[in-house]
Image (tube, rainbow, N blue to C red; front, top):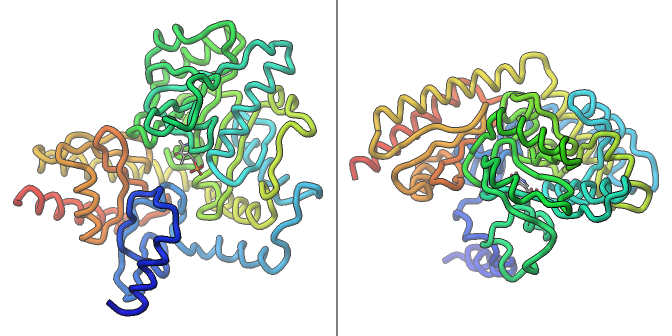
Length: 402
Ligand SMILES: *Cc1c(COP(=O)(O)O)cnc(C)c1O
């Protein structure tokens, strides 16, 4: 073992052991849809750092806006106006149901802000008794305490959260189960329009419609978690726009910074106005560096035709995956998702297939329900889609032959 390898081993132990041991791969740089190791080996990236690097690695426009801002001003705090934040907020609201935005630094912080806003709104509108929030099974909303409680996944909450933290759970997609959870103390409902970690499962238009109606009838707020499925990933700017059922609150993060940490909580003016001075805040949230990159991502997202391309590339990838399922019916089951947020349900073990793909230099993720999770960059080329599918075909063939 060389001395650098030895020091790398012990340096690793300086980190918390909270993540399952990462693949022993160190990337030194990336370009577009590819990542490169120090020794120059290229890996095709169908994971995008879990739906974050939506325009690939080192996109020239994003490098330019980051570099320009880096030479001017990084951070100033929210004690001063930040024109980049005002501009990004305006652009997000112009293209959504929302009127106002709070900027954070991550998905879970955007969620936390929204959950507080649900309670803040009920309190401010004369309903202090309404504080409970309903989430759905198999959801994922992040790792801070309220986000954990909202998702209610016992593997994540056990030992960290008191039995009753003011959250209730309904079964995903089950309207009866949702009705049963609603009480006079219910303040709002949170859901992912396309469940990510839980298994790439889109909510049906009928379900969203029924949930919206329940909220309107009972004075509840509806919050969407579009941390993963938003920002063009589904082929629309926001995934719920496939069904045109608007929420009152929406959390964004992942793709919004293209790799720079940015989170955002979008609300209607009725909700936003109840979050007065002192109700919430963040030291870093919306700082000039993050906002420059966020605006850079919006420049790319709003380019005419980009979202149509995400849609058509998603369709093309799905068709090719359907073809693979026909070829390998013992190994592969079905295709799920929207746009370039795709789940390939496996019959063999998804984690083993992911590892085998990595051996063959294709990076993918996994999700619940024995899914392989494909999240290529939104601007991936057709050539790279074809290359990815070829690697998948060859790898599944290897497994089938073994
Ligand atoms: C990733 C994710 C989060 C949490 O985001 P972090 O930036 O890791 O805090 C929340 N909700 C969904 C749907 C996610 O995919």
